[in-house]
Amino acid sequence: MNKISKDLLEKINTIPAQPGVYEMLDLNGRIIYIGKSISLRNRVKSYFVKKPKWSKVEKMISFINDIEYIVTDTHLEAVLLECELIKKIKPMFNTQLKNDERYAYIKVEDYNIHKSLSMISKREENSFGPFRRKFFLLELLNSLKNIYPVIKTHEGYDFQYNLIPITMNRKLFEENKNSLQEIFLYDKSMVLFINRLEDKMKEAASKLQYVTASIYRDMIYGFNYLKTGLYGYKTMFFKDILLKMPIDTGYKLFFVSKGEILSKSTFPVLKEKDIENFINAGKNLSLSNSLDRNEKANIDFRDILYSEINSLPEEMVIYL
Image (cartoon, rainbow, N blue to C red; front, side, top):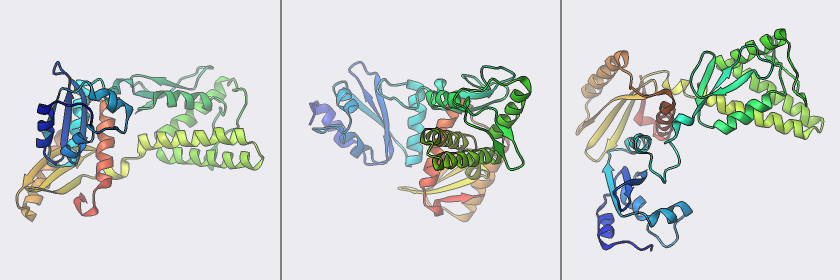
């Protein structure tokens, strides 16, 4: 086991085996890492072993002077609280969630012979996102230059791979722009475009053009990533959702609307009337309230909520 003070070891042994968030503090009381777990005690103890799983942990251990924790009723609350605290405190050893200001948008440009799509840091007219993977977006946008112009057809969209990007005149540029706007605005249009990319990939592979086929393959991966970010949550968040989770002291209800938890409440004994009243109160909130959260930060909270709801048993998730 890594060297650890007697006081800290005693504190670790008193940490409850419940869901929650833990904070690692250095000698000056600064929070250097924030994590979450369904069992705080087990997770914290896992850091103080002979051979930590990650080199980052081994480096961080030497800085830890104290540990604080916050117990939550559910793992869902733990992961959301972790996200909130990381964004607020930005601990030095946390690498994810704290840099949402770097997330980017894709913009469909007006007439410009050099680029049809650009990556921007703030929302503007004809922009889509935000997306996390900034450098991935840059690579995707650069590769798309080789298939312009994208022309709309009765079946969907058509294009050809050009080793050297074509310089489009204004007419071709506007056709290409209109196609790109449709593809980003409508999920069905994006699906049609992805289907065409798949056709092109198979065609190139059948002609033994494996380099071209691999380029189409990467574009397919890229547009599926964009599709998930833009439209992947519509089905789940189209309706209000009631989450009914058993906890140590009874049940906890969550009212979810448009990808946000608007209210939550604990019940020692849960009755049908309690559920009905909770739902009615939640629906009233959904008509008037929205959390004050910036758009870039919101995608992290949305993704966490989406992932947690997907992991719950069906009987805990009720679509209203």
